[in-house]
Image: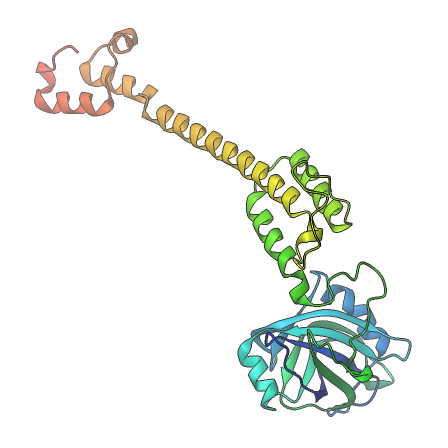
Length: 311
């Protein structure tokens, strides 16, 4: 099952990244003569976005072009989506008019028994940039991420709830850099340390970061976008996380050394082999003078069986 929709506008962002938004599908008959009920799409969206975003591909091929950030079925029974195109090749194809729309790809789960062209249930698998649109009502607009002079028709839909502090991806770049470093540092941390870091992040996100003893309260305002993120506090937390991780690595190396030492010790079969080769009946004799299996074998090879010396 594939439903198609046209692009209506393409604008390049300052960083070359494109935000895609618009109507993904309606209950209008598409080019294949099929209709997808809005309730079917609505039921399929939670699974499609279960990882926080959905796959945005090219021509229904396993080529990642970006991500579907949000999708919802409105009161008018139209499915509106917001997606981001990041692949340079895909962006060039959209700008050149090679890709004229986008298509919803999925698997039909159920159809109306009275009208087999009406899809009542589906599993949504991906949304693709395509060169052959068909659904006449499924339109898409592409706008710049950092457009400061947008017309009313170009304005992206506002979030219904939650913090709207990151109006553009560039505004979130400092936070993304910090979180990347944090992710690399917290591997192996205890739950207590993790809770402390999360508390610090939450406080920084709400502009309630703990006071820094070294901070100057009379500092002049700055345009640094990281100023409200509690960078100093986060850096200290990262230092503690790295120290804890280093301690865990040292413990791992110490355990590995102990394992190697245990593996190097003579094993029980070494003593048994020595006793058997030497022809000594009393096992205590072998334990009184331990030798490796290799030594016992070498001595046995140097003497005939009737001349085997005592060890």
